[in-house]
Amino acid sequence: MLAFTSGDASSSDVVGMRLAASGVSPDAVPFSIGAGAGVQNLPAVAASTAQFLVTYDDDPDGSGPVGVSGRGRRFQSSGPAAVDAAPFLVAASGFGSHCAFSGGSSYLAVWTGFASGRFAALSGAIPVAGAGPTPSAVAISPGVAGRDYVFPRVAWNGSEYLAVFIDGVFDGAMGAFTELSVVARRLTAAGAGR
Image (cartoon, rainbow, N blue to C red; front, side, top):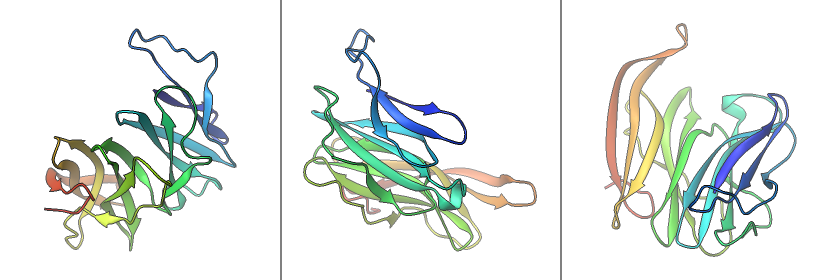
């Protein structure tokens, strides 16, 4: 599945198309994944054996990073039929730099969250079957005072997840991160740290 943004900087939606192994799409036109007021963008796709999960940023009022929520929607791999009637909430606010991976019976979404003036790497399990719930956010970053944890990525090896993210300090005056290092953490299928 290919998911992308359609629109402009002030009003955009997330759309998708399935791709065959040859790279050709059986879909004549893109189908809607997430639409609404404002900007829906930056989709990420995760695949399980029979479906895809698309997560994306939802910024309905243009408030920027702190006001961005995360949404998700699952689709059958055999066609553009949505598993979920409408996108579901993944994270209420401060959602960004996200991705997901399937561990069989569930997906694990990871994202950068913002709270108390600092960035944190968070995770949440989303089931492959059943209703698309808002996952309980679990902090996967160490939470050291004065540090920020951003740009998490995740992979599954068949028994556990491995999340990697950047550990640094955000310097608001410079508008950049300093003192950077990459941190890895093993996670259970539910997204908790080991």
